Image 1: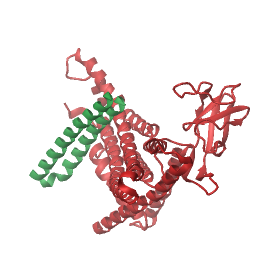
Image 2: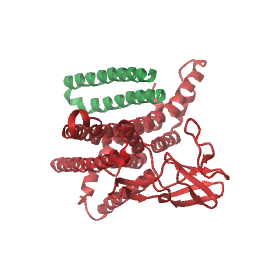
Image 3: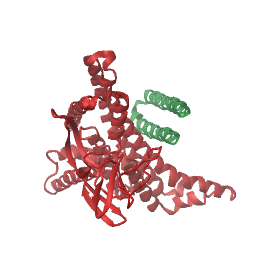
Length: 378
Length: 62
């Protein structure tokens, strides 16, 4: 059994590593084309813009783009729906109507309102305006942001991975009805589920209460882990590197440990027994700030910063083949970039697991602190 | 300019902290190999807390 687990672990890691190396091909193709596009020469700025564009969320799902023989720019990918709440109510259209324009030059008219896309944000133009005008800081002067409920690339990724997890785990659950040992891919998932239950939930929450929270911890663990891994594929998701997503996950944990806190937990937080009365309000402020702000903040910033930093490092190392092309030659720069980014990607596969593990572990720890019986402590 | 110096200082501090955590954990494991699992778990938790602090500082200083 142990050997089987190890084999599966090894095979998974190898498959993931092979899959991620494929991303070089796609990314480098794109870079070459951007470089040849219209004779732009400022590689450094271009690389910066490219990396920032990757880190940010976008309204269409583009895999790569190229310039064909006729000099036209072609994008490979598919558009995603834009759903916005404007002064005229709900407006929906496909993002292909912007023709991949991101600086506000393409105006889309719907319901008598005009919309422009500037740096991946949808703006509604004022009534009389026909083009977007900018002030010195490149802020739009005659347009304002709208409430955006679009299916962006990140939302698409969340839905996709959510359905995938639902499919995997409902199949795993069904298999236990007929047999003792799951078969097929479910055999990979079973040890991971047991690992989260026995190594993360039980020791941190305690034997009495851990069952209640195992479901949430499993969901969070697999959601973060699979999305982290999806971010390393050429699909180019950066879902767990979005502040909104990590903040949402951290708020879930905050709500769960606050709602399930025992009387003793709140007592110790708000009116600490055993210390002088005058100290108690000061301690309450510190404890409240720790539990309601610092804990979730550290959870959300850790995940966001780790994943974003990982993506930036990988993209920068891939970009070495363009920035060092003059000094090292094409073969030298490409070789260096390939070797460096290959090893960083392997480390990123580890980080993807580690961050999911740490988020789940700390969530379990915080929940454990809240539900623990404080009667014998202090 | 100043936030770059600040970022450098944060990384120096976090590096010293991580080195302490890792080094002491290694010592602990060398002294008591049977407690490896427990030491590793505690090490990762403390490293994660330190990392949260360092990232928080970097994030606020940006």
